[in-house]
Image 1 (cartoon, rainbow, N blue to C red):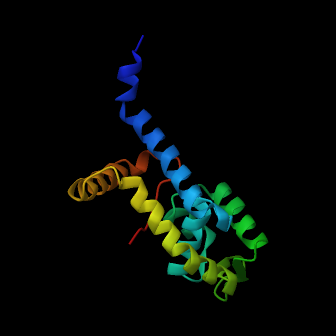
Image 2 (image 1 turned 45 degrees about the horizontal axis):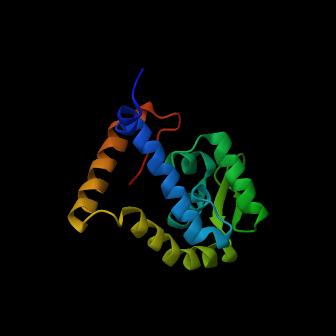
Length: 154
């Protein structure tokens, strides 16, 4: 039977705990905006690529299609995202931020940046850069193993 100490040093456990902490810090900084980290990711991706379709969005933010649909429904209900029919293919709905969505994203910028800085604050500046580089390498190298692999990230 593994000891508690061994569990605390397992990468999977540490990544899960880091994710819990990242969400908690995000919610402390951004919770009053009534947006989750995944909703923020969707808003930011739509802002970067106006008129993106939901399938492409799900690839960009590495979220499965059914969850992407739920996130978009919530964002539409909050009047932050607009869907319109693609002129090239009437079956495809394209996404764009509403004026309220654009304004919210601008308001969120500072709070999101504070959250990101708080997450890595225990590390020295050089360690932060190394941590981000190694974490990105780990995520990119294992992307295909995900239930919702990211695709087409520029």
